[in-house]
Length: 392
Ligand SMILES: Cc1cc2nc3c(=O)[nH]c(=O)nc-3n(C[C@H](O)[C@H](O)[C@H](O)COP(=O)(O)OP(=O)(O)OC[C@H]3O[C@@H](n4cnc5c(N)ncnc54)[C@H](O)[C@@H]3O)c2cc1C
Ligand code: SF4
Image (cartoon, rainbow, N blue to C red; front, side, top):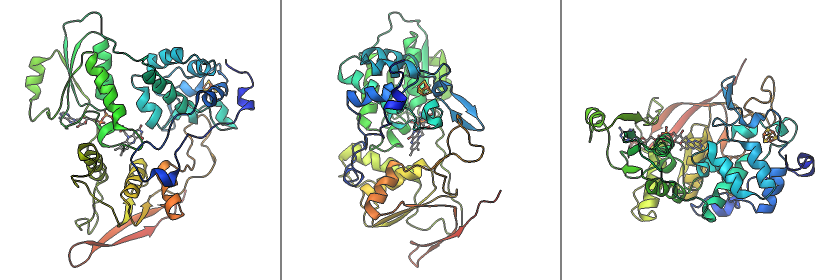
């Protein structure tokens, strides 16, 4: 354990975020790592618990508590406190194929179940994780690990999202010859064409893919299994096939008036925005543009938040988000006890940005959209809603 009294001596530092008003003028990541000195103190806050709840990775009452991949959190917290970054990286890589992704976008159930969080803000685990791996890349500590021997077995992986990439990494390191098939033009699944650039820079995804290629993995893009290559062909050519195709079915809102012009599905909106940014820096205009528009995002989750942040960057006139659930309390209430996932209010990056621009949180709670009305040209004119109330 680093510093015995660290959790009393130092306060948790919030994520190092860029100014919410400034950052919505660009598509760069909204957060940045802290200096070594700040993170050393954050690492010192870890109590090296006998039972580290941060890494239990279990489901309690339907929510995830602790790290689902059992990251060795207290070990690398201690190493960071002692300034032994390279060793911290080695410990981190023992359980995590891609800490540069999780360190940026994981919802951090480790922090929700951290013991310090019983009566104080949790250890900044996610922030420390991200800095360890970013430092690893910056210092050239991450180099291709080419397997010393090959098994002669060939494995096909369908889909290049995080599941496909992690499977490919594990199987390649085990010595198999791995080929990843991806129907899209770019690799990464929703890491590339779902999560917006300000949350996860696409260069971070490309950097990892480049490394995986150097380690011997083959990637085939623009190839849909079941269309361009049949399942039988795949089974003939490979010893095993792994399906990592994700959950790509979108959930529509099938209510009266849905066909009105001006209504889009979040995934079309977000994917086109990222694709246009990567293809041409938005010059091709091949995206759904919210510029100058009054935008309503229906759906209160993280994907909705990403739509809010994207609309802000496109200079929407106003942005509001409707969610079906009531506003969460500021602290745990009722039977939502530690170390369960905390169901508490938070101001995510997109809401912070909207608040900075328009003076208020864009979220409207407990709203159900019941009907859409179009004008005589078929263009969206009205949303009809009901205000709901949660009763036990
Ligand atoms: C807008 C948005 C924001 C998100 N933000 C976060 C976040 O902040 N934190 C977080 O933890 N999670 C987030 N998620 C969820 C996360 O992205 C997913 O859980 C994760 O990407 C799922 O990984 P996967 O590999 O299973 O599938 P996917 O990422 O969906 O990848 C599946 C891949 O398979 C390909 N494929 C499908 N069928 C075929 C076929 N027949 N042939 C070839 N290829 C095929 C697809 O093109 C796709 O590239 C977000 C999701 C969205 C949509
Ligand atoms: S639960 Fe929190 S304090 Fe305990 S070991 Fe994990 S990070 Fe450290």
